[in-house]
Amino acid sequence: MAHRPPLSRPGSPLRTAVALARTPDGKASVATLWTWHNLAKDARMLVLVDVSGSMSDQMDPNRPGTSRIDVLRGLELGALSTMPRSTEIGAWAFSTNLRGPGKDWKPLSKGIHPVGPPGRSNTFRQALVGAVGEMPKLVARNGDTALYDSVWAAYAEVSRTYDPAFVDSVVVLTDGKNEDPNGGLDLSQLLTRLKTAYNPQKPVKIVTISIGDGTDPAALQQIATTTNGLSYRPRSADQITSVFIDAFLHRN
Image 1 (cartoon, rainbow, N blue to C red):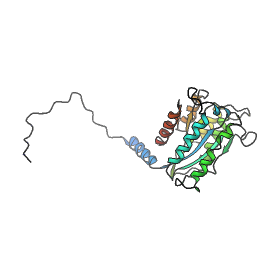
Image 2 (spheres, one colour):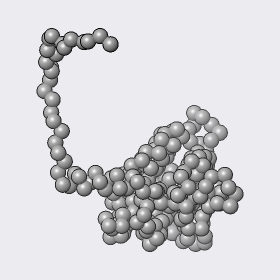
Image 3 (cartoon, helix red, strand yellow):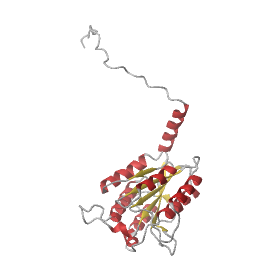
Image 4 (tube, one colour):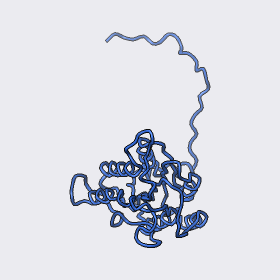
């Protein structure tokens, strides 16, 4: 190989000043470590699905043939097929009077458990697939939306069964605002309960995903923020999938 002489001319000067990155302070370092610590954890979530009558409406009026509940069911089935076997998940449906007067939510799964390996018929994953398939029948009841009571019940359940080895959360999928003919909690009462229950040492976050124009985005944002969670408002079926992935990636 021929000898290459050194450059005889200096390089061009920098056109702009370059700022050196600051060494993170103690709080920033702790926050970064906490983020990576949580990203290394598996997810443990209770998915709370709206099965009120309006979930039979079309997801996109310009693309007839697919209802909102069909889109959410497809999302959940797709997620279940790809989740790591160690992910823990449970599913509840909510509307009004699903289990009798004033009992507005209904477990679709027996607790929150690891989904298990894909492709096996005896796993919790397969049991959830079967349960999710029953959601359109619940929508056909044409019930209302007891959102606040159901969110509180789900939050209390995940808090009660909190597991520090996971990132624990409640994921709320809804197309409506709180409409409970039986009364129940109002927004102020729900937020007060969530503020009291939230424990930074045992954090359980709420992620809200609202679809359609009948929701109350401000209320859902407050619910999520109170638990240091996230709130999304996708406009299409494709966006719902992206939102679900984003929520999973931002689970710290």
